[in-house]
Length: 163
Image 1 (cartoon, helix red, strand yellow):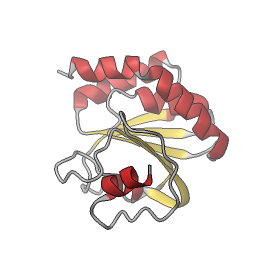
Image 2 (spheres, one colour):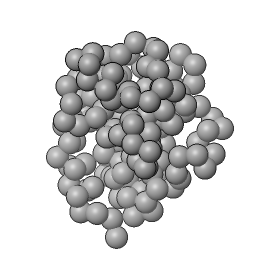
Image 3 (cartoon, helix red, strand yellow):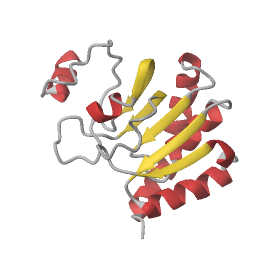
């Protein structure tokens, strides 16, 4: 059974996801292949599919019950024909074969070795000249340049120092 917290978070954060998706639609390729890593119940993935009507979205998560909720949400959001779910974990090779134009990485802990997805793993899914959208709750909004230093430890410290 999926965590009630995950479903509730998707409902509460829905407005944030819709606003973020509208902003992303202004700068992203409208016909993008989008991957929502750690996509949970699909709130962000569905918002991106609505904001990018010519896109194809993959919601990737390690929980089958979360992905069932994402499929239900995609039907209710009327984007089911353009949204696929993928039960996978980082490093299993499932997503690495076809890089995405846009990767949404929400609530990842960039420096935690035991996090289900890391920012570095998410960034590796982005094709050259693609877009990585990273949303981390509870922190100030920052826009970063292309050289994030993902291969070096301490990304979170560098972000906080930049703020």
